[in-house]
Length: 453
Ligand code: ARG
Image: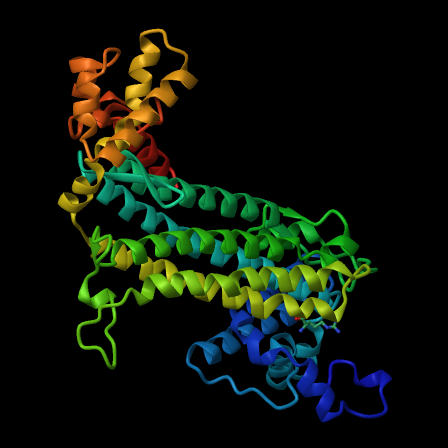
């Protein structure tokens, strides 16, 4: 039996059913669908559209169906097209004609938009909690790194010594922005579509404000045509998750590099790395590689939905059913990635000595020598060029930079002290930079913001 049989002389073909059904993937929405239906029933009672006896029976039937899902007893039929038709079909089996009153004043168009918004609110909160927990790990390690430093890189070439805590928090800030984006998306999507009907509202005295507040939405729709067509919120979540995935991918890439023998900055815990089926000595960073690899599909899911939406006239079109699989997939994959990457980082051990030995290169403080000359009045471009030629000399003649600096009339003994290991970090004085003081206040700012999440 279909939801539209009155107008049709025959039932749907099997090709139509297997091509258009969404039950195989939208059953995950059963909780939201029942919650939405219960609010709709309360709305029908509240507006006097159905009697409270009928309403109570419907609510009771929906509770029974909830129990069936919870105990894994709910039986789907071949003819169930999607989660909405399955639940309504079951309710009518349980209640007869009273069950057939559930859909009064409602369309699957406003129903599915409502379910998707409820689902989105739930998963944004869940993903957000995992991002917070990842940020906590970055903060914890940043704190325990104390004064450890490493070479900071630009173009993957050693650039300047920076504190490890500063480097780790650089990832942390990106994830805090992800949280901020998810929160903004949540605020925008927190609107109830129920009461929009198929697209134009109803002749029945429905009260969309009432059901909106029953469902914990902060507002009802302003335009019924818009709200059944609008999937901006799904696109926004897919973007937020894609960018979050890009950030995880960059962390992953770094851990892949850092755990190589060539870098040797980090050792992964055995429980968070894999071996080789052939090469007995191998230890691979598969979590980091998949955090990088799976980001491709997160970006792909966003592109797929945007492409689906771009040609759609108003209002509801069946194409909109394509909003689901990508969203479910992105949410699942990013949650798995967040948990695995968190565990990988939390259990890694950092080789502070090795990082330090790479950062203690004279060349990494060359810019400090130029700034020494600037303080003496030399224009920066000139100072840059002077120090650059000393570096070239030192490399070509294999003479330590220290000797050339000490012997130089404009630099000398005072400037040569700048080349002392670890001294560069102590000299950084700009806010937001890699000096100890700036990083200490950054740590407390970061942890304060994290506490507010
Ligand atoms: N399963 C559909 C979806 O996910 C809802 C069905 C709406 N179908 C319709 N003919 N109005 O979008």
